[in-house]
Length: 189
Length: 189
DNA sequence: GAAATTTCTTAATCATGATTAATTTTTAGG
DNA sequence: CCTAAAAATTAATCATGATTAAGAAATTTC
Image 1 (cartoon, chains in turn purple, blue, cyan, orange):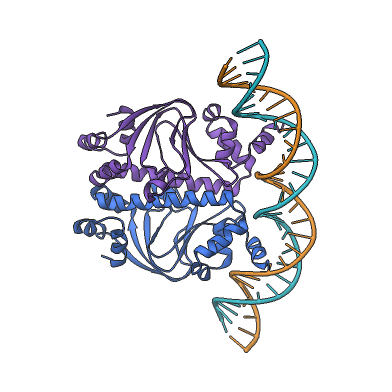
Image 2 (image 1 turned 90 degrees about the vertical axis):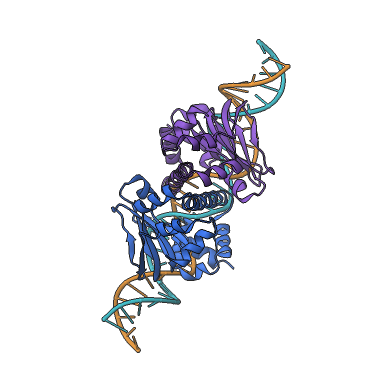
């Protein structure tokens, strides 16, 4: 049983103790060094990771070999490759620590069993997915209506601490820009 | 009880009959005329609609008053404004029929009760949300790696029937392009 | 602390797709 | 069927942000 995850869950639902007990029947606590991988292209993703500490990134290599960051995994959030996980296909992505991390590793097989048994835990993940959907939708809306410069400044103002923690080229990649473009923005005035 | 929705649900989960009975305890069958609205800017969205027949669109007006289509609702799919629904804030969006439609209208309050009671129904929505997340992620990936022309041709090849059903300017809007740009592409060769 | 690698910057050029504006074609309503 | 409105087209111009190519600065490693 991990208090940090339990308190995260209890922000959204109120599961009976036996549901939590079931959830934690199959979990692994892992410490990762900077640059260590949890997933590499070609593998089948079979786990969902809850980030306790540190930061990870989910990224892919495009046709030109350029890294495209899809998501960051920050504390109290989940990271996995859903496409590989639910469609049971080899992943095209990488999950890598961007600093030293602590994560909880849950197998998808076990989580599916838990979700089928416990309405509360199922609702917990359903609620998170709904929140992610809204966040994604807002992100698309922003990207349609603001310039790259505005998007960058908006991201920095919303995540002042975060931008200190990862290299600038990763912010560029996450926002879908080239590192040169971010430099250009920062070079202004 | 509606057979079409039940068979959709049973593609993903196997709910006991009493869960389905509970689900259908509060539902309204609605027929919509072309251009009829289910939601308008400023309202609080309190319903989720399952599309039986026809086609609807979820869109917003940007700062310049231009329509931006966020999603289409096609048969056997759900449509709502999740942001307004879950955050209980006035919507900035419109849901409008693009042709004559039949929908099932479920109140969010009721659906939340059902999801809290029935692991199967909760899992049904959780599975749909996971699929949507994967689809959204793939869409972003495409948009980063293909030109507008490629995206348009790809969309047409994947949805040959659909593009016959809605005006071209709506396809443009959904893909995030101007109608002029789609015309330009089509005018080539 | 020097060397090597990684990260960031600068600047010129280029391509994609928006904008503007006018016109044509299609569809719908009376 | 005729008119009005809606939808699609065409073409010229423009802005954003990618690409390319150096080079500078910062970090890491030995």
